[in-house]
Image 1 (cartoon, rainbow, N blue to C red):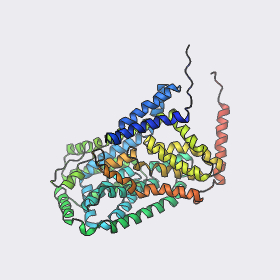
Image 2: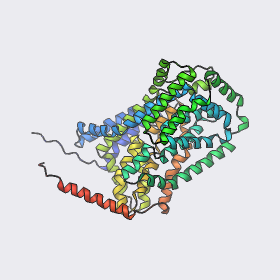
Image 3: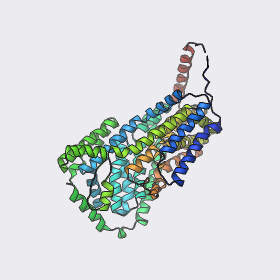
Image 4: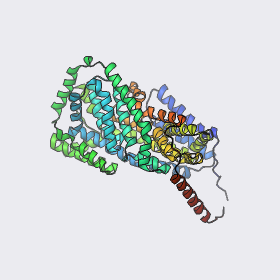
Length: 496
């Protein structure tokens, strides 16, 4: 009779090895082959990790279960991506997105455009509770307005990302905003209030930068307003435009404010878009189905309009969905083989002060985004691993929940192979896979997303906005420990 080998915890070197090898292959793909499709390198990373896990005593069925467990975390996101793809296609066909573009080109000035884009996306994302939905709808319309003003795509994309992910981070309707306090065991609204000291300064600094750029680097006198008028007239010729076309957006925001779950809210928005496309634009039912699945198709004769509006549909999201599932699987097998645990333990062993612990939590969430490719994993994993360290030092778990949001939610769109970054690149039509890599400049230009984590680290080192655990929180921790000990004592002994 053969005995199964007991899985062994990897050494630090072995824990780091699959990540280093995966990033080596990823670097070859991105920089040597100049091919921005990270799917295969990440899939090879799964194989490398599985091979190391096998030699450490893990069997494939157990590793597969670990992969499936983490992939399951992303299934709601897959549903959201599918519906967002449908919405993009059908809201273009209905005239909702074209009408928003014409409104923006008529009402906004080039100088104020970037700052206005941040605020618009922040308000919509705060209302909807989804940065992805905001990016694919209002964000797409703003990309069209920016094109009309001759503003580089990466500047507009940076402003859209700053606003959309700010709203996602602060919205009580957002899944990540609910996940962070759930993992760390704090109240949702206490968590949101505790994020204000880092989020508000980051947004204000970003707004000042976008205003400065608008008034100093964008020369309104050089904007070709004949092209603006050409785009407006082209949209008016291609669609029947009126304020009624805003109905799908208005109803979607209303349902979100009333705290209806994200999936049915977005699906109602897609259905309303279909109804408006049929009634206002005279689109047939079969065409609506085609737009929902394969995206909208237009040949207006105006290059800017065609480049902007030929997009959407479920098929347009398959690149993102497959990337997200592979990245989640990679994160899942790294977690199951305890590679991530070893790396986090190494970081925690050097976190002797609150400042280093808080900075490490933010950095770990950010690095999990880079390695695991998913914002949910980047919140859930550090939230679980760092909790004992905060309790040991007597600091409130509110610090940890804020750290995971700053390194998780906000860093997600800045990693191109992360689910958040892939959504941004695809939904805004940045064309990275087609060789337009200059548009990756949106990453440093999404100021609010990377300023907030830096401000959080600064506060930790200064001792500002870093609450100690309250008496109620300490009592709750003790009660949880007693309950855990009680359950452990009642477990029956089993023969080995």
